[in-house]
Amino acid sequence: MLRSHYDFAIVGAGPAGSTCANALLLEGASSVILIDRARFPRDKICGDGIGPGVITVLEALDLEHILDGYRRVTQMVMTSPLGGRMALNDSEITGQSPLGYVIRRTEFDHALMTAAVEHGCADRTGWSLEGAEYADGRWRLDLAESETGELCSLTADVLIGADGATSRVRRLLGQPFNHDKHVSVSMRILAQAEEPYSARQELNVEKELPIPGYAWNFATGSGTVNVGFVCDTPTYKADGRHLREILETYKGLLPDTLAYDEATRHSQILPLASQMPPLAYPKVQAALIGDAASMINPLTGEGIFYGMEAGLLLGRGLARAAKTEQVRARALLQYERVFRRTFTGHFRGNYYLRKLLERPVLFDRMLRAGARDPNLCCDCIEYMMGNESGVGRTPLYRLALRTMFA
Ligand SMILES: Cc1cc2nc3c(=O)[nH]c(=O)nc-3n(C[C@H](O)[C@H](O)[C@H](O)COP(=O)(O)OP(=O)(O)OC[C@H]3O[C@@H](n4cnc5c(N)ncnc54)[C@H](O)[C@@H]3O)c2cc1C
Image (cartoon, rainbow, N blue to C red; front, side):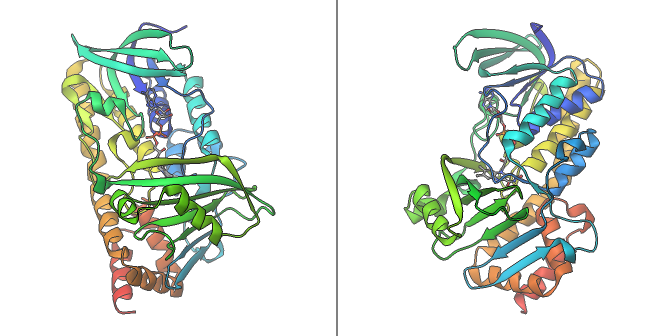
């Protein structure tokens, strides 16, 4: 039975929103509602790469069983247009693996959202946020049923915007969208492999495709292969080709044993963390997490881990705050402080690395340096995947030296 008022309303039941809901409920909050315009299970345009940091977040929520039955990635390959190739195989990894999983978002997001509902979260999936207003110390949210258009409204003490790359909550909070320079564009399609190959991830920079930019083919290990291309908006505009044409060109470079499902070909934008809006809005008791706050790694395009980490941090902090506006305001500010302390340097490092690697010669040298030293290759991938706590920035310096003096 749905109520008319909640302590916490989360708009968006993707990885960021569902993680936040799970964290709130696990820490003792009892009045949480998840609102999403889609009915789950729903697809999300993505490479489906679930980085290793996600495993840690799931463990913190006691939800690691979500990964049961999926195959861990056993190989990551990167290639340059000048012939360089770096491959990291799990047999060469001596410490903890920096490789994660490839899992269809239809399944992964559904499992996270279902867990939140099982923990006691109210379920308003299939309803879209149409408008919101903060008055007299609470939010009034106007919702519309996605299929019938039926309207309803509810109130909440705190509003959490986890509504993705084109976030309405972000706009309602008065935050403009990222500048073109800090937005990537992408297109992906799903395929079935004739002979399923092992779970693996391959990133290719190709001379036939816009540079800087990269294409990928990620295999789940059970037959599905996710194929796509991403580049920043100015590069895309300068290239002049339609994304579909670029994707067709990449498909032509891949083995012809892949059977593509054209109905799964879609494009989407990626707001990059090189330009993040404020995360906490204590005066109006609101916060942004995930793509709604542009938490996408500017080098790798990964965003699931950062969105989930933000959801975990915010959910835990808010659940522990007393039910007064002042204490919640402190928890919101603390969320922003800790997130920025943890990730600002990381995002900046990845942004500069991207700028460096935009030059094919340097990218090629980096791959060749990594190919000669599996440990360096392993550390660099760990750094890029957001789990730099294990390796610090040393691999970056080692990589820079070896790239420059190769
Ligand atoms: C092509 C592509 C490839 C990518 N590949 C990877 C990858 O391999 N690995 C990785 O880690 N990241 C990848 N990313 C990034 C990743 O997809 C996002 O960072 C991640 O989905 C962010 O999660 P989120 O919960 O913030 O938002 P989302 O997953 O986008 O969820 C937002 C939710 O909000 C809902 N919503 C939106 N508006 C409203 C509204 N008005 N009312 C109600 N609900 C609303 C949507 O229906 C959606 O369910 C990729 C992105 C793209 C575009």
